[in-house]
Image (cartoon, rainbow, N blue to C red):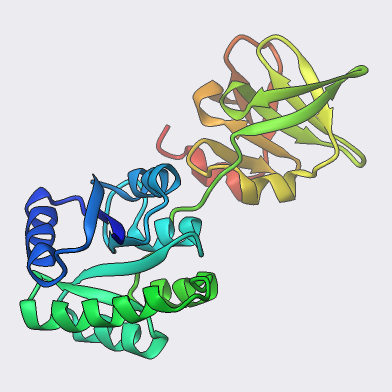
Length: 252
């Protein structure tokens, strides 16, 4: 018996699709259900189903993001509200989909297509490039993944530092200093690269050579030369703000 997982953040939609599938494809066994994209990825790993039905717009991970992670591990069928533009995009990309609310006639045609795919001995295609294009067409912007850990040298020791523990980064010509509340470490990655990889809501660039953790800022002062200096919680050291970044503190 073929197996499947249904992923939709709306319980009623999951129940309806499950009921309609029982009518048009009684042999299909729904082995589990997910209410977001992250759960869907985990359940595919756990059950290794023949099919996964993914609602496109779900919390935590969208259906498109989940599909990228699932890749060719199983056949993917998207669930989408009726949107002619989206349907045309799916048809053009030869991607299987179910319109919600599920219509018996349309679902029957989709099931026939899926049965043919499952009878084909070839592996499902990895649709990563197609999914990225589809996400742009549909205006779904994937959440960016930011650095969570920094691997840095402390003397002869190599340490993994959670980014939330870092007070600031400061670069010189060769190294970037990584400062925490209790120690400092060195990495070779320059601030200009870190600025693209760190969450901009957590780390502000205040100088071409400095990134500061916004939660570590205790205040901003002006010295006798008119420079803006950031005060860091627990440290006597102050960090200079270049004129290009002074606007960040206008509301503080």
